[in-house]
Length: 252
Image 1 (cartoon, helix red, strand yellow):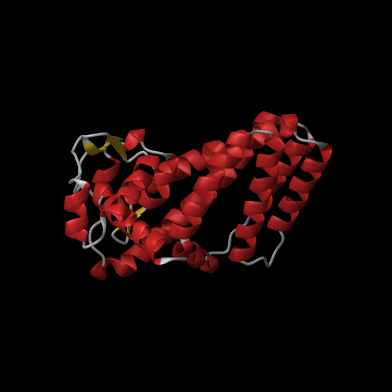
Image 2: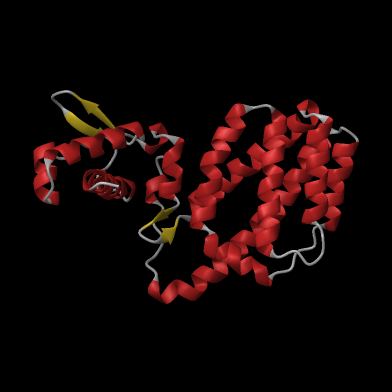
């Protein structure tokens, strides 16, 4: 990668973070390109490209002759979620729970559609992954990989492209931000047999509502385990970590 794109990315990240922590508030104009370039010790061209990237994210609106104005977060692109989850090294717990809410609704809804619209092969693939997910002795990393594969099969079977696109944003956001907490789950054995049997029986019966309900229950259990692991991890880090900032989501 050449120096110019790296510089633009660095400027974009700095301005994005300043917007997310409230240094620049909704409705406020950013400094002019010339002033930003001077403040950051960079050229105006790189600042201009960074502002364009912020506009693509929906964080600012640029008007000719009026510069860049910060937009409300609820007008931003869903892509900004991954940047909001951790600001200044701290997980935004309120936003994390909102993301997990959406992920739960998305996957349960996809499971409902997958039973209704999926092919017999889709159903066989899902049931095989369920069998492997509940197998004794699987590590947490293996289970996470199997769970991701299961959701991929469900999403594909739903025949809904938007489900896949939204998941493409949510999955890496969660994986990148919660890797340490997920590793901690390895110390907590989980019994999946009963829940997996519920999902399997519902798929076999072609019962879409029951499948969605059982998938939602499984995801709720995984969510609670993840949040407990995150709480324990943050408790260990508490002396060295600043208090979590949640102001950025107040207007979301």
